Image (cartoon, rainbow, N blue to C red; front, side):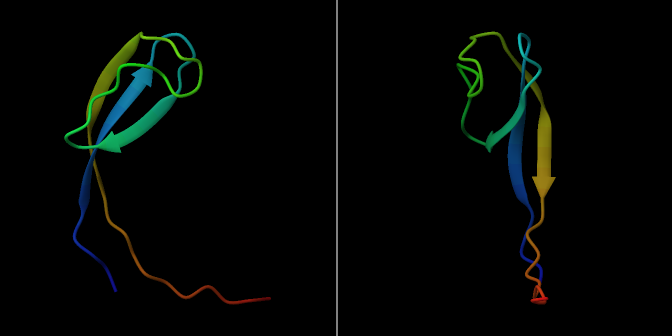
Length: 57
C-alpha cells in the first residue's frame, strides 16, 4: 500500500561531497558528516513510502 509522496530538501556539502535530505521546511547550516558550513541547496526530492512484506529466509 503506497502513501502520499513526501517532499524533502536535498543538500550537498562542498567540502566532503556528502548528500543529505531534510524535511521540506528545514534548512541546513552545517554538514552532518564533517561539520562544515559550506552547504549548497540541490533540489526538492519527492519520496514515496511503500509498505512491503519482507520474506524471512
